[in-house]
Image 1 (cartoon, one colour):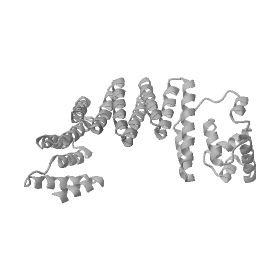
Image 2 (cartoon, rainbow, N blue to C red; image 1 turned 135 degrees about the vertical axis):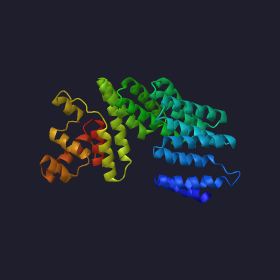
Image 3 (tube, one colour; image 1 turned 60 degrees about the vertical axis):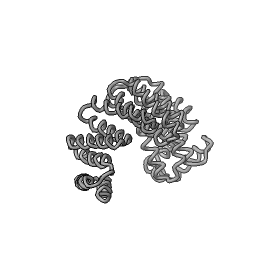
Image 4 (spheres, rainbow, N blue to C red; image 1 turned 45 degrees about the horizontal axis):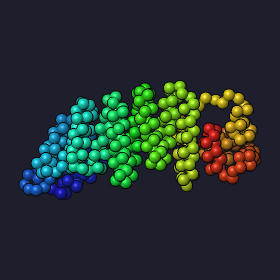
Length: 335
């Protein structure tokens, strides 16, 4: 029986759902001849395989059997796991049913006085509430989950909660529910700032920039994008490998909304620390991760001229390296 269960679990990790189902079915068959061995986990695993294959009724049957088996064995954590599985399953069929299962799982976790299970339940319930238009209630659930993870010093749980809020905000933008998106993302920003989570915070600032751009609040767009660029620059400095650093910077900057052009050449000169237009072009190319040779090819100038422009840029800006030049470009919206 143990062999069949382990083989089924391995098949699941390899996305071999049919093989996993066969192994779990053999394991469940063997359980009929044994006593004291919990069946709930195996039913849950087979239900997961059926769910992945899109076989709703069979997945539902297994999850319900898992819940019954856990209840009979007084396995309260098994009950919680089955309720959560049922909630996820129903999200694709009946969203009200899904919410009911998430509520039941949350209530059970509270009775068990298990803060980790309670926090995970609250995150799923909060997600459900936001999706059904009850944004403020959903945010309260997420905040409670964050607090519980924090008291447990569960950094992974805190990061997952903040990521979930950021993703939810991005999803609301796609749905054009902009005011709700702003509310969710401002909440995520506060949480990320308080918990010093820059890897989430730059995304949240950028997403807020998109929201405010769509809402035509340009002053807030500038503020959020500037904050995002500053964090991106700081994070880039922590990446040792040149290729990875340049790839991160380019990919991150592409997520930000395009900004309105500055009103005059004088404004550009003031913004760029006194650099000439050609020097700004060189700086922008360097910030994009181009080598001196690539910059020369792009601007149709010689390699020696690029080197000369870089020396002038370093002198005017008081810097000594390409990474510092990249950071300056990002922080001053020149990338």
